[in-house]
Length: 81
Image 1 (cartoon, rainbow, N blue to C red):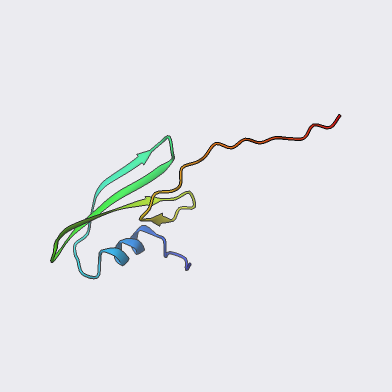
Image 2 (cartoon, rainbow, N blue to C red):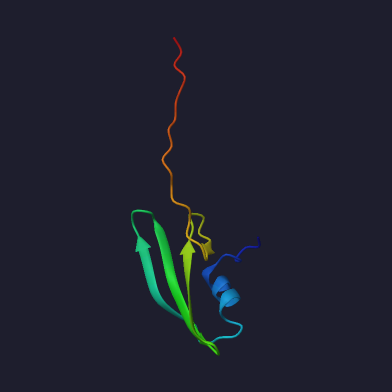
C-alpha cells in the first residue's frame, strides 16, 4: 500500500468523487471505550443520495469496515521451582 492510500480523503475520492460532487461529512463519532473514530460521508448521484461510513483503525488508516474488537487474552507464565 502506498502512503496516503488509506487516508480519509483518498477513500472518499475513490468511493464517491468520480461521479458525484459535492461530498459532505454529515456525522462524526468518537467512541471513547473502543478508541474508534468514524465519519459519515454523503453525496448525491444520478441514482439518488449515497452515504458511506468510514472507520479509523489503530494505525491511523481509514477503511469502510470497522476495526476488529479487542479480545480478552489469558497469559500464563511457567513458574520455576
